[in-house]
Length: 370
Image (cartoon, rainbow, N blue to C red; front, side, top):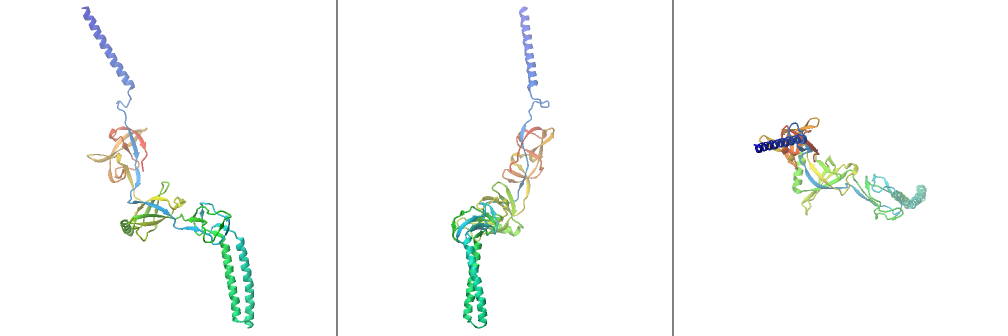
């Protein structure tokens, strides 16, 4: 009888300890488990991205090169020593600006001598006219005096011109490079280059197309009111302009079977210089903007294609809303949205499999990639 009582007591104690352990485990779980509105399921995190407005007009990309419409090598027209350099290397210059001054003293003296000769011969000629009228000299003598006066006047004009040429002026508007001579150097007329000027506003863009593309281009030009060019500048900026003075060269390159195309570009701020390579997109219509959705945001079911959007309910609590959409063409890794989304919608691009319509989410916002 005593043995049975001891066994019963042991069973009761074991049962008590088991119940205590269960209760303690339940307590720990209730204290340590995250509280999420009565359920212990964690709210999923998803990556969310805004929609992008993008130009979807039909256009074609070419690799082009900038070149100067006008360029000039500055060459002296008189010989002498350089007395002054009146420009800053790499600066803009305007037509008529004085760039170099060649020693002027010799040319001023030549002009004075020529003027004195003309003055003397003019006085002699006038005196001979009076004598000729009185028939004291022959026609031949008067003609010789007249010829001498004209030669002297021509020499005077040349002396004036040479003096003007001692100021070497810019023949065009443009950007001048570095001076190729320094003050004190002797330069020779018509043989030595002093500097180079290139026109940069506007600048010419040149690229090549195949003979087939040229034919298609010409057909479209007959119908298009304007041709637009989107030019990607060296700093990444895209500038759009109506193509001006667009023309094709007059020969096909036999080696490449292509023909050059040229157009003028305003080039404000001189971002392009001759020799720059740029990407150019040619199109026959103005820009056509469309809403683009990343393909990673798309999903399908029996009802069609949909995306999961995220909206702020209140106090930074976000919920998922399923939206069915109609799509257009694929461009790179995005697709045109014809209907179903608004500009300010935010779509889930990663983690769409974790959510359902109406569920709560923790959005991680990422920038839309252009």
